[in-house]
Image 1 (cartoon, rainbow, N blue to C red):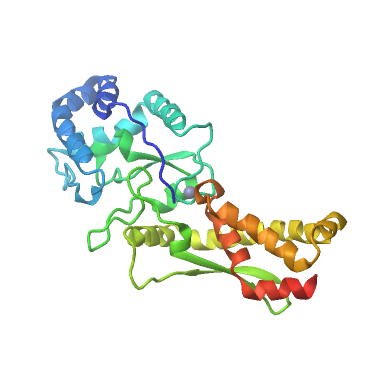
Image 2: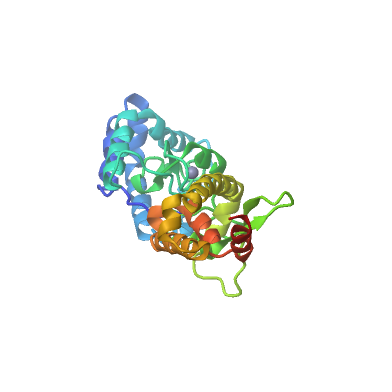
Length: 291
Ligand SMILES: [Zn+2]
């Protein structure tokens, strides 16, 4: 999970441009509620770090407010052009053509997730800071979850929450299976003192089913790394440079450690992999035995 830059243009101006482009009855409905929406937009801006405090504009749908709620909800699907402009601005704000999903860190973004769900908060259906780019899978699995029974947000907010290192949440170690083959095992850390932000990140891992995804990805990467490692160790040139396997293996570990110093750039999967490679006594023994 990582933090990304949000689209910084004036949110109310964006709402106004979309509302103003509506026609007929929808436009009349929009204009009648524009001020209420502005008030709600101020509430959003005032609670960027405490979004769980938001209260829906229409906690109950009634025959009187149903037209407004529906109009606000549908603004997102109606004005595709403005939304695709928003996509461009988001990409620009995050320095590239493709953004990796800030939730899983594995797949490319394709969707805009309504962070405060549209089903509960139709008033934020086109609020730029409520539209977070995600991959399709994370967006689908997140669906319209919002708060726990205790009032805590369930899913990490990539614009406003501070991510913890994946190593605070998960531990990774290389184990040897019954066929004498190495694999990476993942486990959830349960620290005695939970650092700030631990809860929401663990809830996100579970809600989005990221642990099995990481497990699969880390083991795929491990196979690739292992082939490279074997080739490296067996390479005649390597043998000339490093007098013993021990020295060669320590040099590799040094490289993995150097990569771990820049977690953001390396990504969750490689962080878990490199951490396992440098911290698994069982694998150290296995390497010495095999080579
Ligand atoms: Zn994702």
